[in-house]
Image (cartoon, rainbow, N blue to C red):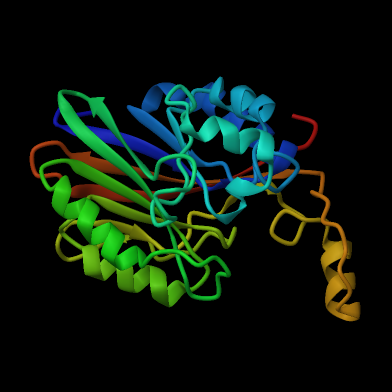
Length: 265
């Protein structure tokens, strides 16, 4: 690896125990290949939210920082930790300033500054939050001499693509999370920003977005509320590798990773 390039692994939404297991197994063999490892952790504990116990377990696998999304607020006990700088978890930056936690962080790597940003979409999302386009542009302008990577946690592919084009050349990478299905549109935009609509998830392969398939089928058939339970079995590992030139702050490459880890491995 050239010294002028930073190699980053960004892991998709980690869903419950099966997701944590696939992350652990992948990083046990591959962590040394990357300068930084990031992951979305909003579904870390039982498929929804984060607990301090599961956060500490997963951080120990070799993850440098976590992003999140709308489920970050699921456990009151963890929300209290979001203001602690020792807890390496972001909440979306376009929540009000009065909300606990922080939406971006500055990381020093190979003599340069990297800004990791978490944003949340508004299309088909229930939370009343600030415009991610305005927030993303403001952060990009404030840190224009830094490498900037944004996790855009959003439902609508159109909103993700539009934000990618809007910030193209102003940030180094925009990766989508939230929908749990890895998209095949990874590429570098014309002004040097690496882009993918959704990284995918780390979680049970035979499931509906990580949940037992029978539960979701019943919900569609009856329209009744029903408790979600994380499925078991073989686990997906979805992530992207991104290489960024330190001098230009432009992306050099983006590559999807899609692996399956057997339940008995």
